[in-house]
Image (cartoon, rainbow, N blue to C red; front, side):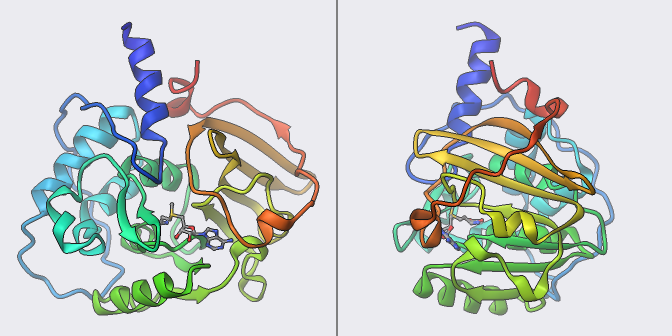
Length: 281
Ligand SMILES: C[S@@+](CC[C@H](N)C(=O)[O-])C[C@H]1O[C@@H](n2cnc3c(N)ncnc32)[C@H](O)[C@@H]1O
């Protein structure tokens, strides 16, 4: 297989954020220099036997594919992914795959979390909403970036309760967490500078666009299972522009998204970001 074809196949597989996909081994590369980012959570300093595994995960499966935002990479090196998977899967926590976490859900694949976080282009002081808390991994990566106001909403109640307890126990006690349908966003906390959606609706939910600030970014998988793409929609004073990043495979957004007949949000297309241009034929 040609190197280009290998990259395309690898990224399509890598984009599978949920269920039982596997990922070809990526070439190793050295982890970049650590950047001083203040800890967002008041976690006790303690020996962490998974720190090397996280460094390798970032170097080999994230930096090696071209993601470069130092704040995102450092947050991925810090976020204790092993704490969010079942104890029996801890030693596999840093594989470049989603893993099951119960309630028929998964913790998202590290590369996808990094790519979506980088695409959100977050700056300190900004307010971000995540739809689909799930394991809490995306939320703690955002927390580890420091300086963000973070909201996250999950529709599966028992999963949400378990994750809320776990995040509090781990010291991530400044997150705003809610149980409910993220289709309608979090109106009382809007507008958001960024919204990251980790379950795929068939169409972009209008309320999420409405809850973006001018200049805000919505990072969202869209489409039916097996035919989804990751979209970045940017709101400006005149409307929205959208950019298709690469094919993905997320669990469907449930709740109102499955009942809604709301029209697809139309947006003006613009060019792809450099790191995504390689991922689509
Ligand atoms: C790919 S998993 C989330 C992964 C999680 N963000 C992580 O970092 O591991 C998608 C999550 O979205 C949730 N979900 C699906 N539809 C939703 C909705 N309408 N509102 C909120 N959460 C939803 C699912 O229950 C599931 O937990």
